[in-house]
Length: 102
Figure 1 (cartoon, rainbow, N blue to C red):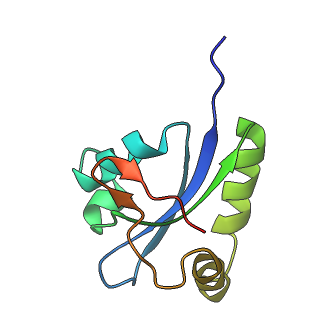
Figure 2: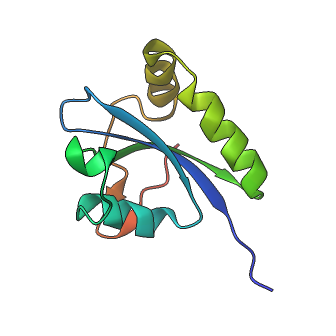
């Protein structure tokens, strides 16, 4: 039986003017898809491909609940969340690998 981890993540664009919150069971694959514009829709349209925040969960239902919670946050609260995790808003996805923050 394969054990999965689930990730809630926030992407932004180069100027940090757009935020996107998502959930996935493979953060490296999903970031690759966003970087290479393989995902049609919001992130492709607004050039949102810079990983600046993520959380890890053992259960998909907890990850989905957290994603919905973050999506409901104000922009100020999302900024605060990101800055508590990644003060300089550095890109956390490099060369197909996720930089462990902290």
